[in-house]
Length: 544
Ligand code: ADP
Picture 1 (cartoon, rainbow, N blue to C red):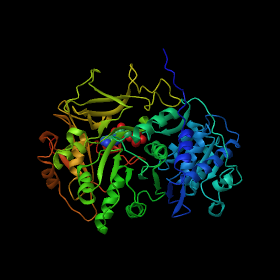
Picture 2 (cartoon, helix red, strand yellow; picture 1 turned 30 degrees about the vertical axis):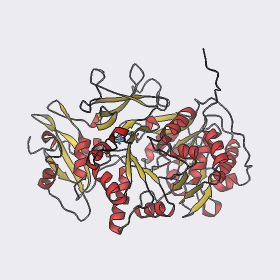
Picture 3 (cartoon, protein in one colour; picture 1 turned 30 degrees about the horizontal axis):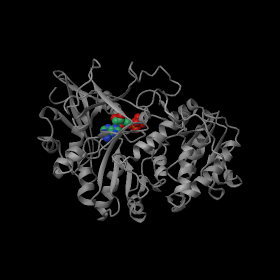
Picture 4 (cartoon, rainbow, N blue to C red; picture 1 turned 90 degrees about the vertical axis):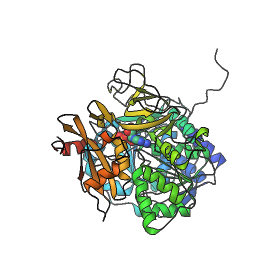
């Protein structure tokens, strides 16, 4: 027997309607390419999104057509999210840090009909326009006064496009399972793969991420997403923030600038921020140098890569900010776990709490996790046994766009293979030990490169650390530690090995240390271990 409840479709246009009705005066502050301090309200944002939706309808698009965006975090990009998705098109966010050949691949693969771009990326698009012939035109996200001269076909400024449009628009009703957004994984191997989010998945993800034990987002928050709108929908913040009416602060092109981030946080009274560890490293370094302290930020959500203990301590001890580590991936919208303490952990000592905080967190309702061994047997949550991590839930991808059935990404019983290796403790806290591809197997046992890296970056002279497996005649593989020193700092091989001694299992201590000027990164800022392994493929360890 079915229940007698309404089947109201979960569409992101509902979030727009709800936000406009309930929080019309809540502010959205942006740095943009053409304005260092733009300020308006949620009400104005949705009003302009309706104008844009009218303009898009006039371009002769069909339901489900992809419209690409190549833009930083600011109010126009947010309007595009709601206009494109709300009108029934698909917002395909593109990471401008990808190689031009990758951008060509994904624009063509996604069959983008129009491209919306920041003026900054116009030269990049001009170079590849010949290779993306199916794009009908380009909307440059600025006004006519700041419109660059361009050879892009049918180029028009955003403000000119919407200027004469009506601001009344009836958001269409349709099946909540229709697609709303598309984001390609950066693809360290092979071509990027498209993750196609549905309205339903994004509305549920917004509910889930706003929960108190997840981001705990509320109307009283001011949120600074330093995680880009061009990657995994900025962790869903644009949807969750408007769902609760949090004030939004967008850093625009200044995402990597510690000084600007600090200024914005203080001036706008930011209470919660979100970003990858690299961003916070820059902010912490700036604040240390300038002798500044955060006075309004209560918590930061940090994920996308393991968060070093030293970073969690610096935020806590110097700024009274709680670091909530999160884990997830593009294929998971992205949120899987968030590190928030359980009732039974509240009275632990600060040092015991740090031991919990370095873990990736516990699963939020909406994502089920399991770890399995090589034979697919489920492993216990004992905090000891590590296995391949698999997930399922309504905001986890069921396949990749136009690769249906051929990507081999799911198990026979429908779980998604994350490609991560992890342990889960009896309290349900997940600890990522490696990517499956990056695992170091020494004498048949796994060494967690992430654990070793975390301890290494805790050394005051170390800017960045990576551990890779290098061939060894006796142990098959042994770890090699690759180090980037902080500017003006010095540290020797032996000092680093002594630093690790006692902090990790003795047989995890790398067999050697090499110093490099920089470590290669992917477009989402992750260490490219494949490249490092290539670089050191012939490296002879002193123990070999
Ligand atoms: P891509 O860089 O390919 O776009 P994602 O942005 O989806 O990939 O990154 C997902 C991956 O990032 C995860 O599978 C995991 O390996 C890593 N990751 C994310 N959060 C954490 C974390 N808290 N600790 C360790 N690794 C993490």
